[in-house]
Length: 288
Image 1 (tube, rainbow, N blue to C red):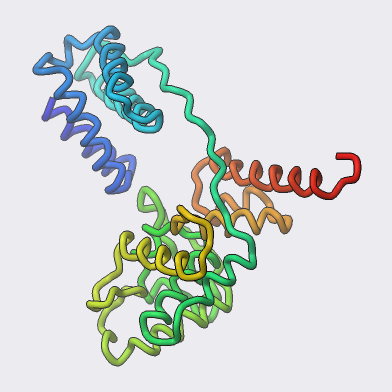
Image 2 (cartoon, helix red, strand yellow):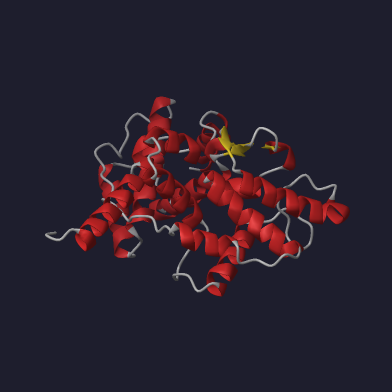
């Protein structure tokens, strides 16, 4: 199993250009499957073994999302092994993943976004925190994309930023004046102390900020302005997409801005706007 796993992960990394996060998850999933097999050679794995594995995942109360990911991982793994000639048969053919519940992403109103973004102080940490939130809301970039942002990636004159997305794919997205001004104010304030660091956003020790660090920052201001509970950093990304669509933006344009490989991923935001219109209709129409 180990030699097959190494070959598969190299294929995902080099040829498919998968992100480090995905590679880690696939490694965990396949090692779990290897433990389940208890030494049984992959050449002897059949459809019944896969069904037993699925039954074990359900018995251990794994979430539908985790089960679906592990099934997807196994499908890709065995498909790769058959295509490369390591195995003759693919035991995952016909295997179905559980249907995932579609949850509409949470988003904020424009007033709530404004209240959140304007809540930091005017000291160095506050300037950084405001620039972080302005940037997410202005560009719709993911938190993982934000932390990898370098100063050279920002075109302050052209109003654009280069974003490194999933699978190391790069895209150029526009960035608004308010976000650019916030970033400039932060960089000017930090320049004398941390002028050598190429990263845009730093932690309090002068190192590149982490995803966890940004989560803590946004949690801090959500609590400060008493917004709704359980708001993640992604709520600003969701709000970005929702507000664009509400104001007539083209769905494919929003797909490009968000860095979604599939239009179906972006379409979840059309459900949000439809639900909101329905709510407005029911509240305002005299015969609704």
